[in-house]
Image 1 (cartoon, rainbow over the protein chains, first blue to last red):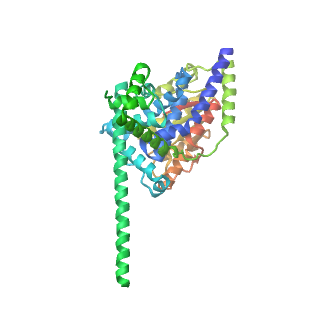
Image 2: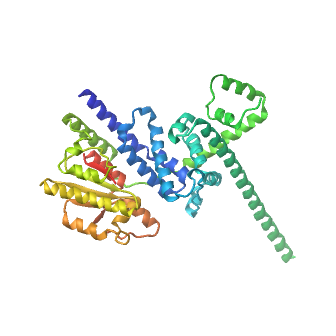
Length: 196
Length: 233
């Protein structure tokens, strides 16, 4: 009976953790797909799956990795269903360019998220697990089921590409600002000439 | 001494240990270029964290308080365990359930109380829609044949919502027929899924016997807590 009670309490605690994991999972799902609605659906699916498989989690310390692995399966399942002819690892996403979204993100944040959207899916997943969630390489190996060498090379490529993308966006933005400034200057000179 | 980009990344991520780490740090002290590369890496990591920190999930309607749900689940588990009847084998001992189980090889149970089932459909798939209704009908018929009470809920979210849309369902008539034929079946549309369509400018025309309820996850968790059997199609 004591064992049964212990098992029951453990299950209750796990159900609560699954429910409470929504925000963390959503952030990760959003980093992968950049679509608010899809991210919410993926999280809901992952939580459902976790509830179904609750008895399969043997080590509670591995809870986060277990949840991310389930989320990864949901995301890959979605990609396979919607883009069956494409290489899942290479899929880039368009990102959310709605005016509300543009307003929501600060300028630099926008450059980062746009850079992330341009990364191949496999690179985006690794960099978000390591940098957003602070997971170790070993945990990423378990979640994505890839060798550690692959984790390291994907992470490097992702960061190099992301840095380049952000740098490019900054240069473009600076050029646009300069162009705007020059146009204003020109307008001011023309006005002065008209007055003269 | 030159390090590969992967090793520099591994240092920035705290993955180097022992002599590998001390060797790296010895070189780092005098290597300006390496210091600069690391600074850029740390800056990138911070930028990434900052960019996604503001991302929050959409608010979901409160159905019941989390504490209540967990408490209910605890009571259920205690009763179930003390009764000694939680077992996946139990499904196969229910009258007429072997046939039902065979309809859906992926059938999975979280918890069981006799005659209480929640079926969940989340994909836009005509075959799955049919499978959902077949499963529901088989359960209702089995219980009716053995003169036992049954409560059955069918909940749809995401693409599965189309099953309940008058304007999109290939089985609208069958859903209505089941509702009229069996008073103990309830069809529920996930409020999140309905809201999503509205956000896209689509007003879903739900079949008149379908209820717009809580979110699918909330409803399923609630029912599991109440001891219902969960069947994912």
